[in-house]
Amino acid sequence: MSSIDTTREASTENEIFSQPRCWEECFKTLEEGQQLERAGKLFSKDTEYLFIGCGSSYYISQAAAASWELITGTRAWAIPASELLLFPDLVLSGSAKCQPILVSRSGHSSEVVRAAQYLEHVRNIRTLAISCSKHHPLEEISASTIYLLPADEKSVVMTRSFTSMLLGLQSLAACFAHRKEITDGLRQLPAGVQSILDWVNPRIQEFVAARTFADYVFLGQGPLFGIASEGQLKIKEMSCSFAQVFHTLEFRHGPKAIVGPEILVTFLLSETGYAPEREVLEEIKELGATTLVITNQADDTVRRQADFLVELKLGSPESVRLAAYLVTCQLLGLYTGLKKGYDIDRPRNLARAVILNRNGE
Ligand code: F1P
Image 1 (tube, protein in one colour):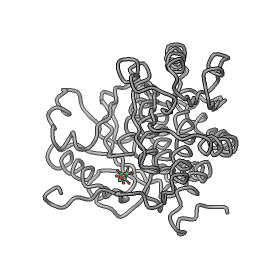
Image 2 (cartoon, helix red, strand yellow; image 1 turned 180 degrees about the horizontal axis):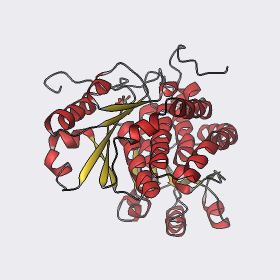
Image 3 (cartoon, helix red, strand yellow; image 1 turned 90 degrees about the horizontal axis):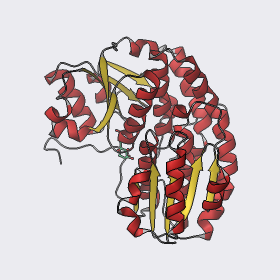
């Protein structure tokens, strides 16, 4: 199959495995439409960048804001759209000029649409949106929209749309900051992650089939905190299991009270914080947890402490490896949900977007 077939029935599983091909198509649409250069025209140097979204799109915003600072050196942060709607002065208090970037797969999530209306019409601030579809209220309100149509999904659960919009925003940062090595690193990801998917898939299926967990903890620092947040959401959405997220070193300060062999603790080990994060891994393994570790390169200590180890072995700069960390978490959610007999394509209590009526209900 050469291009992405979005006409077939919802299939979260296919959408997870389509990611490397989908990313290549998204990079093409960004280049062909000169979308990054056009979006960059909205930006000026003395600006701070505010990433806004809901659900998975809020976690994209967290990872994108951290990547943005690492790649461009300019201040960036992320908030859920509801914070801007309920505490606008708390969010927009600073004196510095702020460039809002609104993230939404559908462009229909009411809180994100209302955040755009508030910024454009009340605060007279020009906004940039990024989305995987067209013809929606967000594009009508935002000054400019980046489209990643190949990444759109039939499923309720966001998988390739998450990673594609994150890669799109990292590409925008690299373009804006003229960081060619980052752009090159991003373009190498599809091939690198295809081999990771091929290696991880049969092994994580076996791991999930052989063990049952009462609770799931995801740990990550810096730009990996947004990815760890999405990892816990995938377990919740796809398997209706309890799952929590913490900054890795924060897990010591109380939450480790829950640790036992029935708890799966997933470590997204960064290169920058490798040594202190590894110490937490040793300590939590000592307390009896079952551990899943994702890292770029492991040493013997990590190899000994991991019940399940994924080494990404990617040559690209650390800041652009984030999407590669997530695919294992997506597969963990998928196979745990299937094992518990859930219909992954029709997750309990969820819709593709949260659309509220006028009274906000
Ligand atoms: C955001 C979102 C999804 C979530 C669910 C409801 O949608 O919260 O992250 O998984 O599907 O909608 P969007 O604004 O990105 O379309």
